[in-house]
Image 1 (spheres, one colour):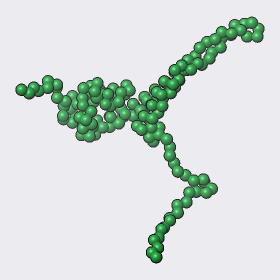
Image 2 (cartoon, rainbow, N blue to C red):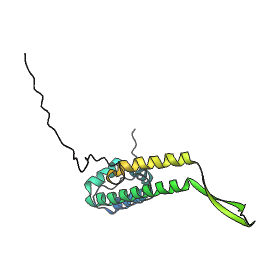
Image 3 (cartoon, one colour):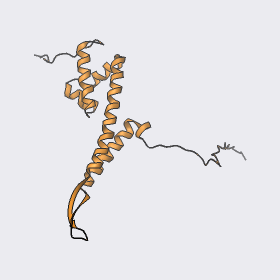
Image 4 (cartoon, rainbow, N blue to C red):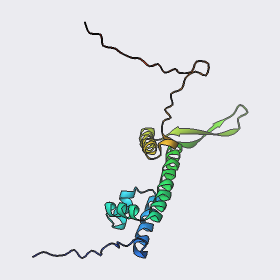
Length: 160
């Protein structure tokens, strides 16, 4: 005997309030730092079905693009925060030349290898998600005084 799943079916009509509500929850998850896959899992919708919705509804696709841009900006901000937190500030008390106590502030590295891995991972991901903004710029140019020249080389076959 076969049994049916008792999961509620996801709405299939474009522009339906239920679909919009689910999509809004996915977008909120993305804006909080989750990937689209993780956000779909958290909401309980299959990502392939969600992608179908995006292809089916232009307004959802536009909202998804904005949520993805927000996620990319969040990743960039996190990268800076991780790099800044790799050092902690400590205070050291010493005595100056007159015998007065002086407090010196120093920055000391804390778990730099882990921070480096986190930053490098986010940098790589940003370069793939937004290559124009965060990718390596590969531009082939010549010297302004001696610009690159293109030569056409032709080969001929000589029969003996």
